[in-house]
Image (cartoon, rainbow, N blue to C red; front, side, top):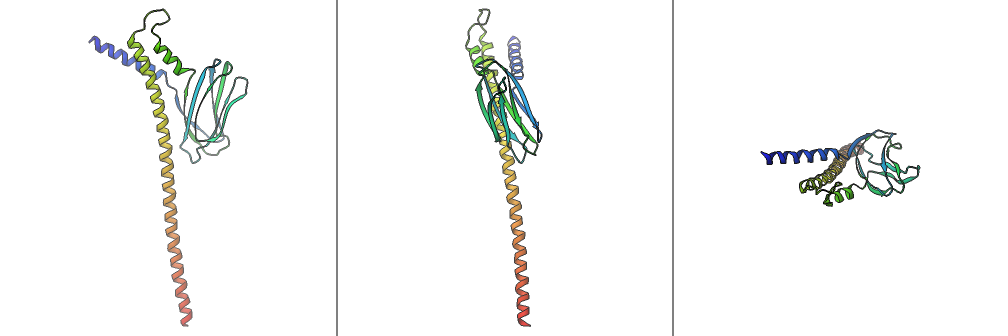
Length: 210
């Protein structure tokens, strides 16, 4: 019974840390609009960003990051996906935006955010054998921290790959549909041209006999 309660506690703790660590989002990006988000960073803190656009005929959007003083840290034009990592040069609130202002199609956007210094902090916390009070950290707790962080990274990668697979399936289905329409159009045109040639030749021979 005691071991069951321990395992149940570990599972609940993993689930809690797993749900608290959510960092992947899916949003609607209407035409002629943009979506912006804020991230408070200290100097030299790292922020990792990645996005993938799907569910649209045109998958291209603009992306940019503004520093606290308004300077542009990074800008990307007309791209369907991106993965970017940067270190804050100054302390303050950084703004990153996904822009669909120059496109007339509504889009869906999946993006993930890691930071600041998330991976480094998790690994250093797990590797540290003592807590702030100087007491030994329970090995089970260390294992849970490593497991929860690994699950988070795996989940984010799976979500990213799921969206990319969805985009590729949509592209393949769209290409198949276009090829089918073009093949049917070619067949109809060939039948029409053949019928016209038969009609023209028959009328020409009829005129020649007369």
